[in-house]
Length: 238
Image (tube, rainbow, N blue to C red; front, side):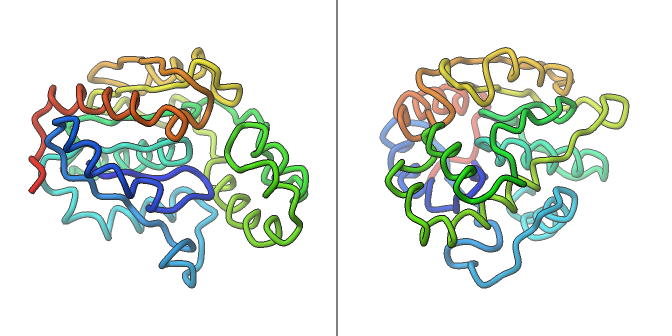
């Protein structure tokens, strides 16, 4: 299972998933995807356009995506995972057995601007802290904001694309949609809008927590991912 992170995050957010999923009996090999401009790739230029990022991922992950796999993305990661799968579908490449998308608006739905990439650092940090993305004490530190908000802002610009329904096509893979019951950024009904993009069926599952249930209710999420994995029989963990 390849895992794409949310805005402002790196591959390390999935660092403990391999061991945890093995303990749940998922039979998955977890491959966290590191995007440019963060953690060990901090020196590389960040992307601000979805199509350019997806083109690079399609090229560099082609070997990893050649065999049976699931693709998981949280928030921005969900948006990127869908766009990557759509690109691969259009060029006739191997597709995932299923997409697991959590906590992001569907591509045809305009962004709600709760997290506004054009906001100043203080306003953007406060909004992110209010959603549980960063601790409030960090949001109040000017030095932290100066270092971290440019990354968040660039990632939010990646997510700013809106595509009309007639400009896209349903994916030929099942969509498993996850959303936090108390998510104020992407409420349950917003996740349900993804159904028009699932040509092989969609399932919506609500988990406890808000937008960052991926952290606050990680165990519940991993149990659900284990159940999804058992339905598709992906490559077993080594």
